Amino acid sequence: MAGVIRLYWWSEIHIQKFSKENYGDLLGKYLVQKISGKKVRWYRAHKFYLRNLWQPLYVTIGSVLEHIGSHCTVWG
Image 1: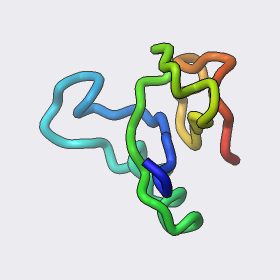
Image 2: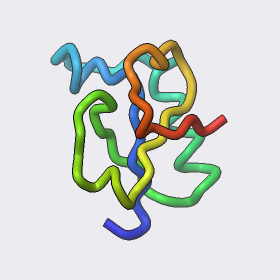
Image 3: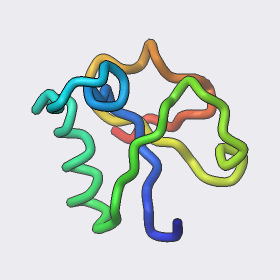
Image 4: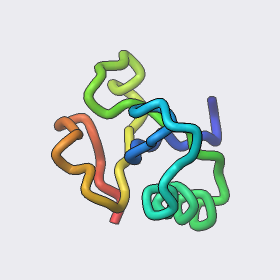
């Protein structure tokens, strides 16, 4: 997954099983993709992944800080 940024945002598709995302919640994903030039993949922030030991999990904008752990990095 080289060149892919692991990112958490409030995803209504992944979290609430809705058919569409909220525009405001997608803004962080969009900005990270445009600024970095890399693909972004959604990861659940409160789950532990072994990958967290060597790849950062980023969080951007929105009211998601209450859903993240110490393994997350706030990109802002």
